[in-house]
Length: 149
Image 1 (cartoon, rainbow, N blue to C red):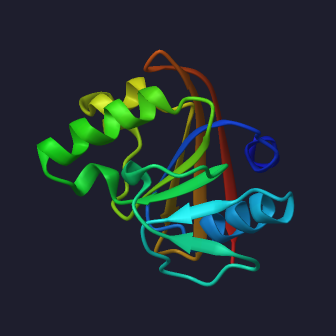
Image 2 (image 1 turned 30 degrees about the vertical axis):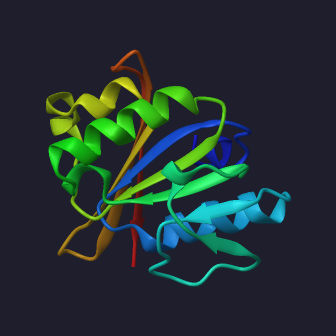
């Protein structure tokens, strides 16, 4: 399911748990396929061109990186939700530093995302990635990946 997300042409992916490495992999894959990327700010380096600006100001980009959508004030979150509804055909990576998996049910953003990737680094020497496919705010498919280091 992780590879399928890298090959998406459109959709919204919420990446939680401060998974910089995964976010960088997805953005590099999308840029490598010729997508024009607009980011609010870039907490890591990507290969290729990334434009910095606000996605709400307009512009014609193929992919977007929106940082910490769940940590915003209520007014900004509502503005983001309406923007997501209008731009359903675009490729959007929503990067949240907080870890959110099962508690996604408490957030209204569940209605606007297609995939949830929850990254968690455990203290006993492994990483866990839970990937969920959502439709209409409900989980329809789920897969977990574990990596020891």
